[in-house]
Picture (cartoon, rainbow, N blue to C red):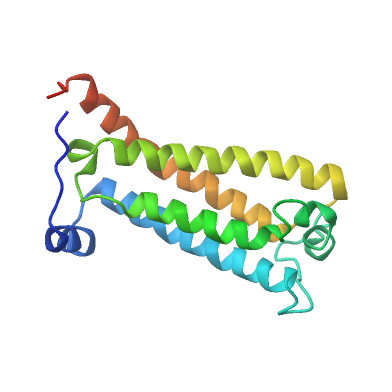
Length: 175
């Protein structure tokens, strides 16, 4: 398989000015990932004392962001709150979606596969964390569940390009 590497100027032009359904879905996924970083930033601000209250953003009795995000559940990994980890995670997803040119499914098919794989892992992790969040707190963080929806939508946006990359690989020869 030949991987075509673009010059920085060609990559810049393609990402900023290019068009097409794959690139438009990537941009939407990047926008969602950036929204996820905002959510993670707000949760991080609460978890580190930058803000003192974290109101829920969805209506209903199952939501209690302050309880969940201040609980042992939220501080059990790596001697830190989980908000900053969520921030980095959404940044990595944006990075995977931004990598490569407008036709990366053909030119560098590993990139859309990595992006879709990252989005799938994100969604699986969100599902597991939601179950643990409920089990440990009998409540959910509305901010976190919006982040879960963002992860699901991002995966949906990444799949078509990944399938295109897989179809292209079936006929590819390794040089």
